[in-house]
Amino acid sequence: MIETHFAHRRTQLLDMMEEGVAIITSAPTQTRSNDTEYPYRQNSDFYYLCGFNEDNAILVLIKTAESTKSILFVEAYNAEHALWNGDRLGVEGSRERFNVDEVYDVATYTDMVQELLREHINLYIDLYSEDSRLNEAKRSAQSLHSTRGIKRHIRAIRDVTFLIRKLRLIKSPEEIETIKKAIALTAEAHHQAMRVCKSGMKEYQLQAAMNYVFLHSGASAEAYGSIVAGGNNANTLHYIDNRDELTDGELVLIDAACEWELYASDITRTFPVNGKFTDTQCEVYNAVLDVQLRVIDAIKPGVKRDWLQHYSEELLCDALINLGILSGEREALMDAKEHKKYAPHGIGHWMGLDVHDPCPYVDEAGESLAFVPGMVMTIEPGLYFRADDESVPECYRGIGIRIEDDILIIEEGCENLSSIIAKSVEEIERCCNQL
Ligand code: GLY
Ligand code: MN
Ligand code: MN
Image (tube, rainbow, N blue to C red; front, side, top):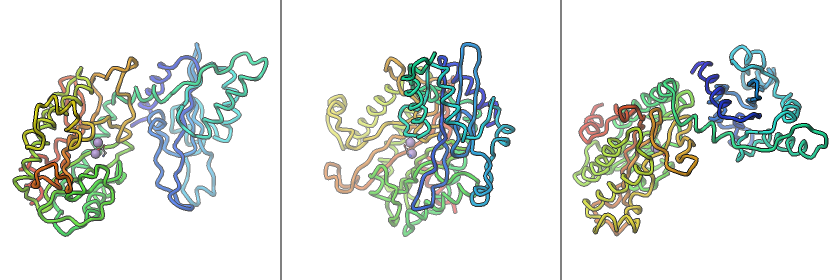
């Protein structure tokens, strides 16, 4: 991503704003334990608007009737910090690198923001953030409000994240290229997992094989906590323990993917530990695959996400009837939410700078959004039959299957960005037996 892309996004946001000031803050560092920290991950909204990847930074956008301005506040160069943690870009470096109108030392933020708030009536911030610098701005706005003789003061504090996330919903060609890069590495990692998997291995060893591919290629290891779930563990939707042994004759569900330049991928494949599906596994696998292919087939501009959710539930309910797990009329079963027991999660979610991109799902009237080109959504149907669930025939117990791809909406319909990853029974078995 180059500087002009970030500048364009700032202009788009300013266009959406009424006169006022927007303050967007960097993510805080996160303590892991005592005095050690997690690797730094920037606030996606902040990164989206300026591409700056250090902590303790603040972006301020100002809009008046006559003009707009963007100001970046950054940590000044600090020799002590440079010794322990490396150089920061500093004020001068940031001025050279970033195409914002002004760059200042973050130490001047408090005074400057107080001055700014005297001149505007709208303050745009993340309303739900506990960030101390936003609280400071709110306090300043409050104190100005009760000061006599002030000509103008903030009369509305508005949510800036809603505007930013509306923009984030439609990916630019550069964003799509970045997501494709993340997916290409994730594809390599899933294929590697299929190739090296054998019974007796630990789930974490498969995770390690994938993380090797990610890190070796220069990606951040994981876009989210990897799920490597052998056998019945697949029926725990957010299983991230990954400590169990993989057993001959069972399936392993891997929901794991890397992040590239802060853009996520999100892929699930389920395959046999020993490289060969049993007839029963194959039957359930193909039922899920059929649902996934049909849902993807239905995606095109104009289709509403709510409709897609309903359609996928109908297909999953039919699959459960065909497997003999549910019996009766589809409509009555769905009204009673019988299918939800075995297919409890949604069909997919927006994906981008966050794996679950927090972009809106409904318009301002509360209506489900219709797809338009540039949106990226995961499609991830699954069926889950717990080992101790006596409501399903014994042969299905302990099987959990999810298949997940990342889908881009295009003018002509949609493009499966992860279609290169082995998915049919034949492709998977070929890959599993390919060392
Ligand atoms: N990997 C998380 C999800 O599929 O939503
Ligand atoms: Mn997902
Ligand atoms: Mn996933």
